[in-house]
Amino acid sequence: MTCEVPIRAAAAPDIRLEPGFAAAIDAVAAHERHLFLRRSWYEAAGGERAATLVATRADGEIVAALPTVAAGPRALGLRAVPGCYWPFRSFPVAADAGDEALAALLTAPAARAALGRAWRLGPVMDNDPTLARLLPVARRCGFSVLARRAATSFALDIAAAEAAEPWPKPSTARNMHKHEKRLARLGALGFRFVTGSDWTGAVLDELVAIERNSWAGSRAGADPKFVDPALRRGWAEMIEDPALAAMLSVGILAIDGEPVAFSFGADCGRTRYCIATSYDARFARHSPGYLTGYRTYAAAVARGVERLSLGAGDGGEKGSMGAAPEGELIDCLFVRGAALAALLRPFWK
Image (tube, rainbow, N blue to C red; front, side):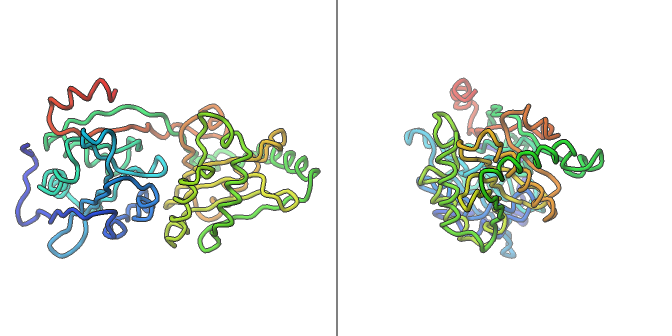
């Protein structure tokens, strides 16, 4: 496969394939939107036959780290970038890595062994920094890129919202006060926020207990984040990484000391990714999730967060908060060769 991107020998990085999830990943995860893309994140997601392509300059600086795992039927030899949550299915690339470095990452002999005949990146935001730089280079290097839309993601720009009126809106503040009064009739309310070194296995167990009693933990087709033992183990591994533990945080509402609702997310630069809000179904009529979510968002704003990325699903509810579409989630399959791409296209689409 011929690559149209000229790769000068003097500028070409060294490309090597390391087994597992390489420590080099942490060295290059510096972009504000990619701070979460650390070795521990990929390790928690897991996967079979993990390997990492690492691109290193002559001076030893790491410019890219592309981890993949086996995906799909083994006979097809497909690979995929792993991840536990949708914004973070990307991989880190240094800000000053040029097209030459990306072309080398895709076409070096080690890349063929690492990426196979086709590899998946996604779901990921269509404006993801790595994806935006990778797509034109990959096409010029002979890859066919099959893309499919997964969903629309919504976000709330706090600064813009506050410029129009106080945030939360007065009507929202009144609703929060109303729900808080109703819940207080059931017992003494307690709110606490957990992040950094305060994370423990006991806190994760509280989240499991709340989710188990929620609609997400009891309905078929739901998307629980903690009830599944494998998912809980993944979060437990991540909070062992101090950098990730400092980004992850949760607000927890308790009634008479019993946790009944939580709002969980990750602060990445100035953006908070709102991963899950859940509540015990016994208290549904009093909207504990609504109250806990807003309390947690307000705490994030107080920490300097300027934007809430609310994810996909229920655009009406997110719109009522003032959120607007921030972009599309897309799933990309990078395929070597037009013939194989033509064969895979109808299945991928």
